[in-house]
Image (cartoon, rainbow, N blue to C red):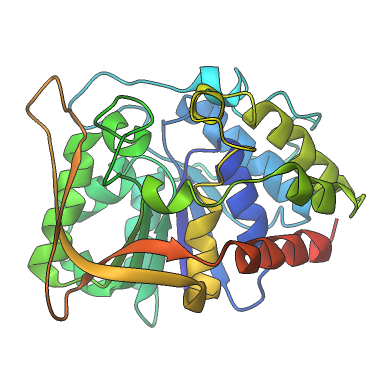
Length: 311
């Protein structure tokens, strides 16, 4: 599977990248980063730190949009730490961010790929929206789109909204407009799914038992992530792993149940900005919303991947 990842590392983005890098069936063409959990300069540097940790410093990484399409930027340093990775003990990156702008790199990759590409988005959708605005025909070059974002129930940044869609609701609406107009096969992984995937102490112990540089970094990041308001206020037994679910879906879709839907993103109301309005549909639909996951299978997949990282 030819893959492009757009992300905003971020603790859970970092774990998702490690899962993707360890999967030989994913032909990762590039990574673009966006302002989200922390500013884009930090998301790009964090992406490089994770690539170097996992032994994949040759994967090209590009910094994308530093601000949302229309609204003022917001960040989540209170969740992910000032550095975006929970203060994990990793050195500054030795490699450099590719000088090509992330949106331009994504456009070039889609145009030049001999076959349509799969795109996994783990952060605000600014980069992808900008690419589709610049060249609407790119919609026909996307084989599959898997998005982490949205919530059917309560959000995690406001009562109404999930962080990625709240951070750039206008970009999210642009993307879902294109999904509907061009029938892009799309799966949405929202909070109702990811809140089932809790890194409990038992799962963290299994990761710690690997006793590798990669596993030690993950355990350190999870220790910070477990203290977030999201985990504490909802009395989770550990931190929820949002973004790794996207990569798990690409690798083992049989772990998931989905339903056909249509989605609209609220862009007008100050009270419900970024709300994902999900309407279930009957019959085939290009848009599927993940509703259930086999949690034990997910953690088996993730822990095996962490065990096989070259580092």
